[in-house]
Length: 407
Image 1 (tube, rainbow, N blue to C red):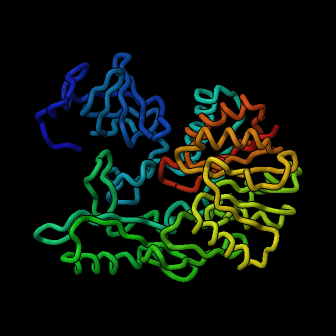
Image 2 (image 1 turned 60 degrees about the vertical axis):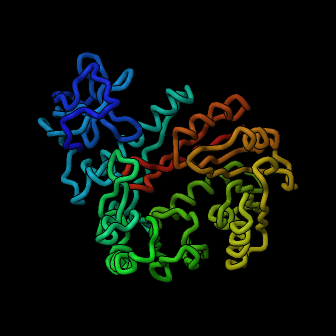
């Protein structure tokens, strides 16, 4: 919250004055976790609130067709409101939902997927109940706290971005959503950084990755993990799903959906270090993993070898020619895709549709870009089957969604 009473230079003074307080009723949540209220028909977004609540808020920005406000006080709390466990919740930008009972978090995440389907993909389609994380706090196996350029008195805050800020940090000596092993290692890591402040010319990012072989802090250290009895090794700084408690069920669901299509072959088109490809090897005659990064392809091949698998092949391919080296016909192949937050590129989708797989299992950490891509799948003749959200990130606005598409 800002303490200045003078409006910022670019503040637009309509329809509300700077720091004007309003009492509003919250009637919805956005997929970013913001409460939506109306003041005389005008939309006001307020963080850390629940639908049904009457709250007092303070305006800090007016846009062309909505305003943004800070929460001042909850006047009539929802029965679903709970006391956040973290003392910096509301200041730290890492969590958005700690004030909400866990069952309610799941309800809203499911509803958000259904609304995105309806408004972005223009499809009315059932969305399964969100599969909850077995662990609601202490689930993250990787955190990356930041610090800024040392000042005269050394390194100050070591933590995460402040809510609503682009650069300001919140000091986080203990992260309630990180695994216990990480929180045990964190004080010493913070102390070491502060002790060596003189060696930093600018700010930086730390890494703490909890793996089977301990808490790793060097991005090049090799992390050991197992998923459903399958062993993986990857660099600690690489991408690997970081809620190990729900991971076996999440991976199993995606592969069961792929297997149910009756295809002989699986292509894992954004394979990374081989999570889905290696776990799926026992379900298909042959599995091919495709990835733009050559180092990831080497790691994926190593992980297949580690598990004694001989029916996996990994190809480093540019996004422009993903399916060029896939020898199987599309009609006998199911493709699994797990793209980054931005979703699939247009050129990737063109090739995918030209390849014409029997079915596609689309795993996404950003349902908004997934729904955007879904429109193109529909136009290409694919029919939507199961829509299954998974809560890999309790207490936050994020979720993973697995959609099954068949020709």
